[in-house]
Length: 452
Image (cartoon, rainbow, N blue to C red; front, side, top):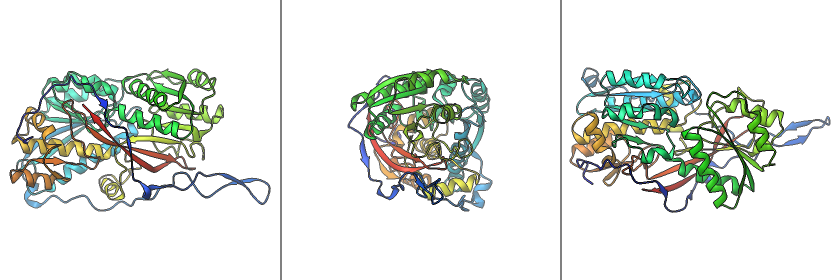
């Protein structure tokens, strides 16, 4: 498709899995075996040195691109905003996502052409969570400042609170982390996109992972919102299709602080493994589930909403050998170093790549269409993600566009390739494992295709 062609704005096609999920080679990412206990010489026990998920340190590097002198005084040609969590139950995702946005902006502004000869300006605003109306206030503020696109939100439930506001104003919204399948058919006029895949894919990978790990009877504890209920449904379907049984599935609501009834109901069915689909509530659920109730922490499975560093929250060994899934490729040390160059305090890199790609795609769509307005960006988002000469950076892609070539941007997060619903049609799901220190490291990655 020509990069100047207007893409269809239909959002009526449901998302479905095409071919089965294929394992992606990840032999370089094999982890050490689980930590185990062994008798000490004095009759006690000492933990073995090997961990399930040893983290390799990534050093911050001075890799933030410097803006050329000629670009420092040029005008702003593209104004975008972000609505990402700095408070609320997903606040741990805010720093890497914001760093991803800022890294892309820095690289674009450091490039010779910039966006149509000018710079990108980004205005960051908080999303909060679904217990507040911070996101809607942020959207109102950004729209009043004339942004052409917005990166966010992280939470599917939060995005649903302001999507009509943004897309109705003909401003492009690109979420780096929304995974609810409901967005695929949402009436957004063609202005909503996401660089993370629908949970149809993550649910399939997680369900298969649990069964393949030997879980016959599975329990689920999940957040009852657009994100949690959609993911729970897809995980359950995958488990049953793989020959397992979901023996109990218990929901809780945003804002709940006690989870004893859900934990007791699931444990009463004697599950082999438990999937916890939650956000910050995990910090309350796990100590009771594993610490008080005695469930084996190595049989707990997390998802993108709660795959986090719990080294400061749980007793050592609580999550040793537990696993979790996260959409996107496994961030390599080079990209982590770039993010650390933006924010040296980062300890989590989740959705940093997806946020980075969201900005690059909007900027390239503006270049392809010759205008940095919402309607023009929207009309070219699908085109710059598919069908032309492959390129992997803004500068490389912008040069191809200047030469009159059609482009296919393949990002740091994966190939992307938007369909007519604004969904990536193919994506990676990373599988991670926790070690004795309650931090996680890559185990392997799986690739899946999604057909519109």
